[in-house]
Length: 133
Image (cartoon, rainbow, N blue to C red):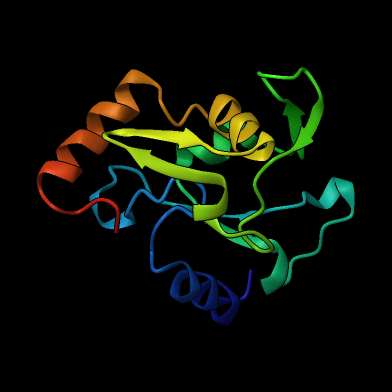
């Protein structure tokens, strides 16, 4: 990936995961530039299809585009940080990320935003005044 493209993604993201909002400065592992729509699904390596993702979100998302909404059982796309606003789909409820929409519910479930380890990390950042970024 071109260095200029990587730098543009980092700047646009504010150096935080565009899915869970975890700040890269506090992560043990490097964040990854990921394709919102995977190349195997026709996604391009262009700024409008790339997002900064923490390793946890990127690992769980993989090349998937969506999942079943845990509430309705309907196939629903994941939250798309390129075309949607985070606050339209999620809100912080204490140290939990609460979904507000079908896209939010599917994303929270599959990307495991509220796994106990992730919640514990988020708690520490909230207490330190570093989350949300």
